[in-house]
Image 1 (cartoon, rainbow, N blue to C red):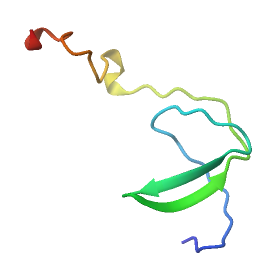
Image 2 (cartoon, helix red, strand yellow; image 1 turned 30 degrees about the vertical axis):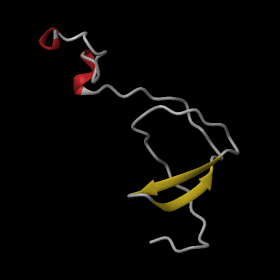
Image 3 (cartoon, rainbow, N blue to C red; image 1 turned 120 degrees about the vertical axis):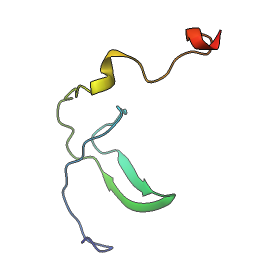
Length: 69
């Protein structure tokens, strides 16, 4: 458990790509509440993860699906 005022180092895996720079501040929110905050001190190389559904997009433009015409 991390208490207010504690400093930790941790690694995270993002579910979506975002722009970030070393020294930039970030906030971790859960259920509308801030549960953590910090500063990027190291940004490792991007690792692309392949999802099972990567062959088809999760979203479609309105009218692009034959069932909606």
